[in-house]
Amino acid sequence: MNIREYKLIAVVGVSEDASKYGHKIFRDLLKAGYPVKGVNPKGGFVLGNNIYRELAELEIKPDLVITVVPPSATERVIEACNALGIKTIWMQPGSESPAAVEKAGTYKIKTITACFMVQKGVW
Image 1 (cartoon, rainbow, N blue to C red):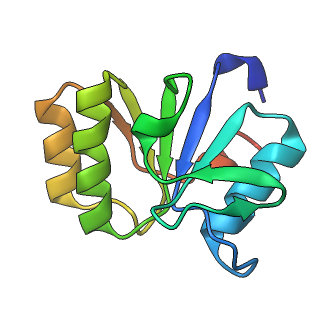
Image 2: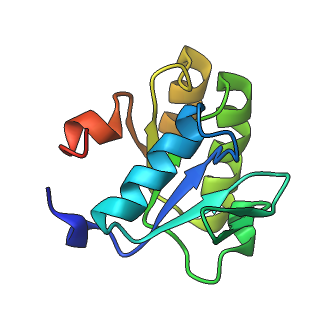
């Protein structure tokens, strides 16, 4: 696992609910030492961290976005990534759709559709 591979990871879909994958992924990336910020339209705080309402609020542009949201929301996240110049998106299982993958491809955003946590050895 190379946590220095990324300057900043944004997890879109962070949840206060500890049973949800948006919470588990955020928690375990923090525990593993990854540079990570959380995004959820509700905002607030999760695990003592400020949760941003949208990607555009982040002070530093992430070099990777992980989506843990329904496919229709992932499509909106892709639009935000395109507007911000973010070039890599990792769609967690259940977050991807053919339309989302196609849209990312149209914008030349590198897309991975697999579990980040398993692929990077966090889980």
